[in-house]
Image 1 (spheres, rainbow, N blue to C red):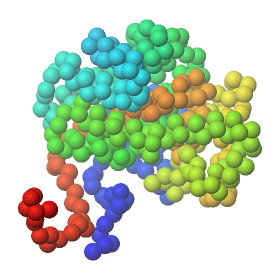
Image 2 (cartoon, one colour):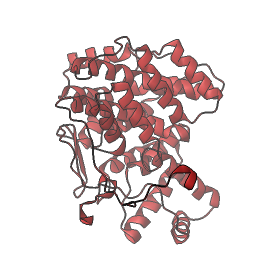
Image 3 (cartoon, rainbow, N blue to C red):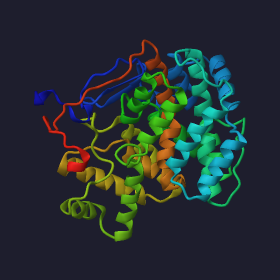
Image 4 (cartoon, rainbow, N blue to C red):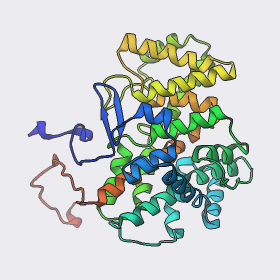
Length: 378
């Protein structure tokens, strides 16, 4: 029956998870029962990683030990660095470079191939991948600018260290806190497309690196991770047009264009992460003494909510937040991966437990009863 078909798997229940939950009607998001607002404002990204992987928030002693273990895994092998340099020289897309480098990480992993259902081995690999992704992204960004990569520092947090490796200077407190919160906000989000992709790969009992590589390839798409880049490119176009942002949006909609950063498959109301990132975007603008990008965003949001009854998603304010931090626009999606790898690997570990291979069906709508004609008679 036609009504059995769920295009895009919309609303189809395929798994049970204790990692994160979204209430699209109320606009809430929780990680293992904790409200995203509390985690973003009070917890570090390292604490959230521990929560996702271990099932509970760490004590101070546990966090210190966990952070030390993460720090110890930040460096990447020379072979990986050579690949990243070659990709930068070839002007590869940042997400393509990240996908290739993460896949290659499997060849330098000290544990080699392990039983996918060995949870401890899975978490150790997850830690190594998560610790190295920022190093890969920062090295790629510097190589393509003609600069040498910067080695990771042991005395900086996950968020601080990435900004340091990217820019060559230690970030100020506002930038560090903002970026750390952004990583927390993007760490997990139910069965989004990239997480589901990772789970499908893991369900075959393939390895963690393959699952994460699958997820990166999925996140690369403009309808998923690429959306935040689209938002900033839109705002730059608004600025270059010298039009009032609302007039620009009206004209765009009248011409059939889609306004980036609005609407969500799950949320019927404003994405709770957009509230928090909006606050950070405003704080960064006030500190810089330039409210332009934030003001554009607010004007567009108010118009879209009032006139079109469409609320912004997380991408809408993450774009201006990153832009005001001086992060290149085409690194927004790799940064999304930098955070979401924590959630991907947590779901992969969960998938391995009580695993069953994912094998959906498709309804055949092609021809039937075709008469075969030999090659020479066609």
